[in-house]
Length: 324
Ligand code: NAP
Image 1 (cartoon, rainbow, N blue to C red):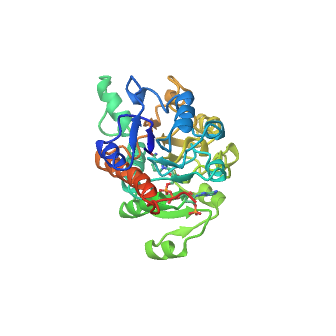
Image 2: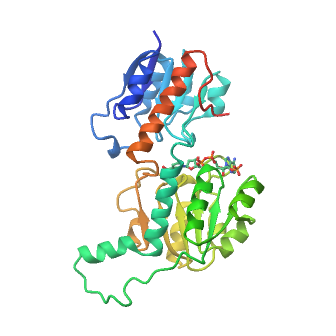
Image 3: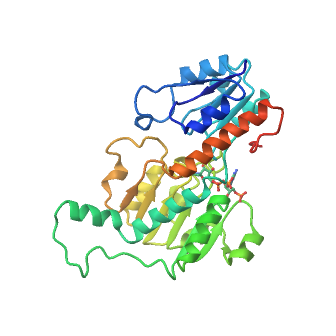
């Protein structure tokens, strides 16, 4: 009987139902709300790697070479996410283990959140909410002046599915959209009317910088102090990709030195972001707890795709999305 380990028992029900078609599902029970922690204990992952044929994991479940060294019969790792930086894909490949993910179905929800964060920053929505809850006096004319989006330049760092979806939304707001990406995308430039710029030029001229690039060894700390110091003074910075694309200390320095008018983040180098972290001290910083794809319908689709990847694999078909 095929053994399928699932790293939590709180995924949408469809995931367990589908997986049961091809094997015996063993779901890990956190024993406390999963959102109080990120990822399951390494010992559990090692045990799963040793005992099971398939593992279904989520962001924060670190499947590194140490975990994989315990793999005996493991054949497939299916992550319920598009990002797979929590999995040592090279080591998995070396061992003949297939890695699958769930791109596309989460793009719109995450792009929506990016726009939500951008609007929250530009129009100081969270500060306004705080002001009212704290019962502070304000003058309706002059309080919490923000920035237009129309006519401003928005620079997208990493034009994959997510970056493209963010670009489309920003164009609808009347922003001028520019991008930098590893691979230039002439078709997208042509179709959307957006412009490619070298990264430094994008940073120096954009009023909003939105990071939507995958985390890889090449992009780790891409946003270093050297990059932040080149940004246009008074720009807004948004990261919905992965925390480690940004050097957090450099970001804090850019905020402290007034290079940035504000920052909005959904992802952090360390998750959950430690309580009372330096970033929480800035009124002009908006923080969300990695909720890019956290919409009921989107998560259900992700769960279905992650399960379908495994089901296809054990039926001898190619999974929907294999990480190459
Ligand atoms: P995607 O379509 O696969 O795009 C990946 C992007 O990363 C592309 O821009 C690609 O550049 C770039 N990239 C990949 N490897 C690179 C490398 N070695 N060096 C430089 N650039 C590299 O994925 P997506 O749907 O756009 O998502 C992008 C990332 O957003 C995901 O990897 C994930 O970490 C993150 N994400 C976060 C949330 C959330 O909850 N906050 C939700 C969804 C996604 P080129 O195409 O130009 O080569």
